[in-house]
Image (cartoon, rainbow, N blue to C red; front, side, top):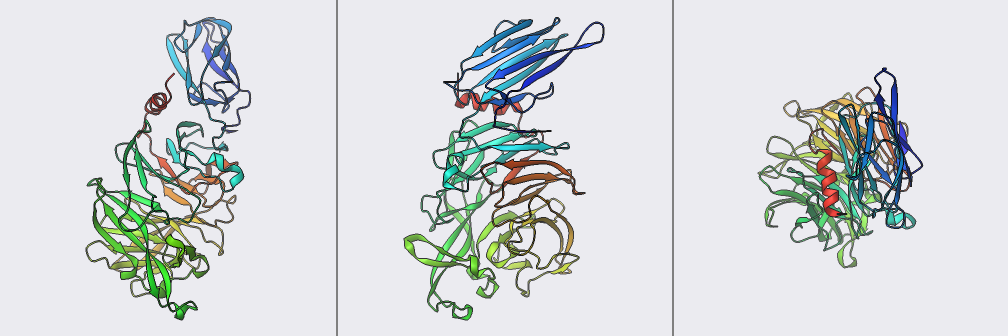
Length: 483
């Protein structure tokens, strides 16, 4: 099953209506502009290219024993047409009744600048929704970079917010709020106005979160159970001797820092890589040079890109330019173990991994309920990317390979990306720096692929069943765009 989610080609709904003789007739609905995706009786939500200057023209055919009502109007049988005047982002509702049973359908007008993709499904998804903020990689398609969206398991956008400055990254918070940052086109962690914004589903701003002393970074934000947040930032350090590594003896570097921030913005704890990670652990020098505040050229020696609680009072972090994942103790700040990268006294012995080196410019290290660690391993300039999982044994100092997932349609990954293992053992993977997102089973079977036409996605978050009701998302859209 597939369809280009926002290229609204002509389509029709068919709803089976049993007759007294047992034969099935159908309620038919066609539209201009066309509806997307392809319809069947079990699909409730659709999008169309309608709007202020393009009214939604519905042609309906309800056989005897069934009726159709549009936007609360009197239900009718037979063949008839209805024109609905809608603005972009607004929706029309169709109610089909037959034999005392009711089915609701919703058609929402999609902005012409919305990101485009094709969704190809061959199995049953294990998450109900997907949260993402696609960005267009070129200036020619930059207009499509302005949306945060929630997509259903058929690839249909159900909820979205358009922002003037492109959202980048997105996080679902406890209680149902959503947070995101912005992409200004300059290097990450460099803009003093950068922040994480927490929004309700109706788009209203709850709070803005920034790190203290240096700009908030866009790579990650982790909500804590006590209501605080973990944010990341890059700290500028001057006059660092890099002559041992073939660079200046008076260089500037960027260290990775984690700050725990209260909802009011107060810093209550911090950790900085310079205090615990040696410069000799940096491996990706060819990726590390960048411009920071004030035009200072600095070496990004660590490039912290994810942080997650380890379940034992510590934090599991990923750092791209050392090709490693660390577990750090929150009380002392010391490294409890290291996976990948250069060998140190804290390094774990890797058991059973068919790939070497362990990581290549990886992202999105996460901790599963059973204590295993998952990572999106870009393997940039090494080999094809993968989602990988390790079982950590701190007492034996081992990391045992459990599983890896690849997709033949993602042969390379230059940057970004995420890998989330679901409770049912499938994986949802955003193949960093590419136009591909896919759900893949533990056996390697593709459940669905979402293929962007002109965007990429830093991260895609699968949302479990029961987190949001579809009615909640529709009502939030209606509050933002009332008719």
